[in-house]
Amino acid sequence: MPKIVVLPHEELCPEGDVIEAKEGDNLLNLMLEKHIEVDHACEKSCACTTCHVIIREGFDSLNEATDLEEDMLDKAWGLEMDSRLGCQCVVGDEDLVVEIPKYTLNHAKEAEH
Image 1 (cartoon, rainbow, N blue to C red):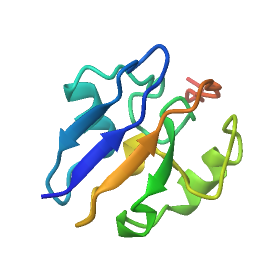
Image 2: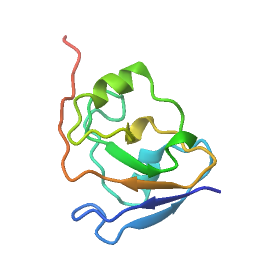
Image 3: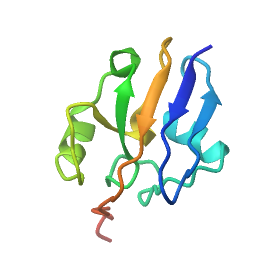
């Protein structure tokens, strides 16, 4: 079973945490279940960047990012090569080390009525 190490974040997870995961689990859901209250303004629909995370280890074991996720990440604060949206990350068979950026930007888009 993969382990997810969440690095300390001043506000959301001051001590850091370790999460037991199963292959196929959604990264953001796991973090929320552990009361690591990462923002998800678009309700996990890949329409904002508030759940932006940086995968410090294990990046290649995750599912491949879609074009939509890549487009959204272009708007993320502190974008790095190993950035992903937590709501789009499906845990693979390797351990992960995850960093939550200090800031997020909310570019959520709502459909016009």
